[in-house]
Amino acid sequence: MQIKIAIAEDNGFLAKAVEEKISFFDDLKFKYRGANGNEFIGKLEQDHNVDVILMDIQMPEKDGIATTEYVKNKYPHIKILMLTVFDDDDNIFNAIQAGADGYLLKETNPVELHKAIIDVLEGGAAMTPSVALKTLNILRHPEKMTSDRVQLEEIALSKREIEILDQLSKGLNYQQIAENLIISPSTVRKHIENIYKKLQVHNKMEAVQKAMKHNIL
Amino acid sequence: MQIKIAIAEDNGFLAKAVEEKISFFDDLKFKYRGANGNEFIGKLEQDHNVDVILMDIQMPEKDGIATTEYVKNKYPHIKILMLTVFDDDDNIFNAIQAGADGYLLKETNPVELHKAIIDVLEGGAAMTPSVALKTLNILRHPEKMTSDRVQLEEIALSKREIEILDQLSKGLNYQQIAENLIISPSTVRKHIENIYKKLQVHNKMEAVQKAMKHNIL
DNA sequence: TTTCATATACGACAAATGCCGTATTGATAC
DNA sequence: GTATCAATACGGCATTTGTCGTATATGAAA
Image (tube, rainbow over all chains, first blue to last red; front, side, top):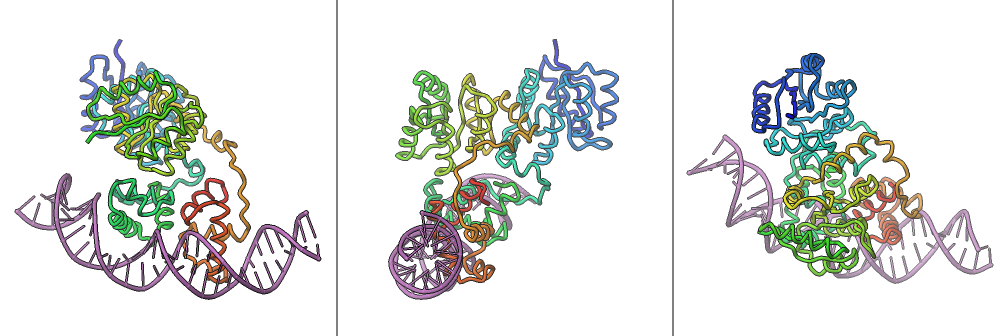
């Protein structure tokens, strides 16, 4: 028996790309697509013999979060995989609250998409590593969940800089960080100098505070 | 460059099995194993040139959670993957709080283990679908998180000390704090000296981190 | 009443930090 | 093919911090 899949996605090109990924696998069958939340729900009401829905978040009329909420309420057995370009905390959190069974980024390759579909049908959850990381971060800072959770402007720290900032936040000094990362203390200092410039701060504590506020740490 | 892997696992057979899984891949290199938390930490102190640690939870002497906490504090750059048979909410939650970068069940096959190792090294998080599901469930019921959990021993800081620590945490220096509290910088320094003694730390960042951990701030 | 904790304050010294240069290499972008 | 960025690395210098020791005043606890 083939797994029946429906797509909710406004962008025609992206929808086609996803359809194509699905077509690679014999056990997957694309049924229909809705170009926005309301249109999709309309089609679903007509034909709800669907196993998995691949849902975009940003859609006109009714967005993916609201649509997920509606569908999960009326057809709780249908699995929903969010498939989106947005991987910010807010969207992830809201999608989970709405009842999504997984959260994938659009760059996900066909094999991973296939695996994710199987995973959710077997009762698990699926997420790309970067999203998994964000859910862990939310779990690590429960106090932030209740609060407003306003998304601040992105601050572009490099991977190395975040690594160093993380160690700074633990109270390690330049020497120790240098040893851990197997680089020279001079380099650590230079990295920190650059971090300060980017965050517009002037000492370790301010840097860590600002980073936490922006959910970088 | 090969990825250097250490294992913390008390059961010899299971440790061997994991070693074997690792040996399938040319880009992975097994370095050493500790049969309990303390033994493992001993070896790690000798040789911390390790990229990823595969950590069991249930171990004598010092369990995987406590060991993870210790390692993450001293070597925050080293990635830790929990590899265990327990997939209950408490263990998952505690492992995440301790700083684990991923949570895999022992039945994980070599290919998935390999992918998980790559994922965490690339800065993501890795988890098996059933665990991912549990984290989503925890996120869906945040009210359970606020409940007691683990209350750490009380630490008796005076009112003045807390006041100073609070300002420290904002990134203010001695001079600024002195002005705010209308006392001499010398006094601020002495207070901070006393705070360090009480918290058994040696710099601002550690003091603030410890205070936050104990809900003083 | 005497001890203890707290808050106040200063001096000295070594270590760490913040801030300014400059410079090379490799990867990515245009 | 060149410009930009990330990561690496060093030197210098003023400031800040961490750790001593010492000291006085006050209120609470023993």
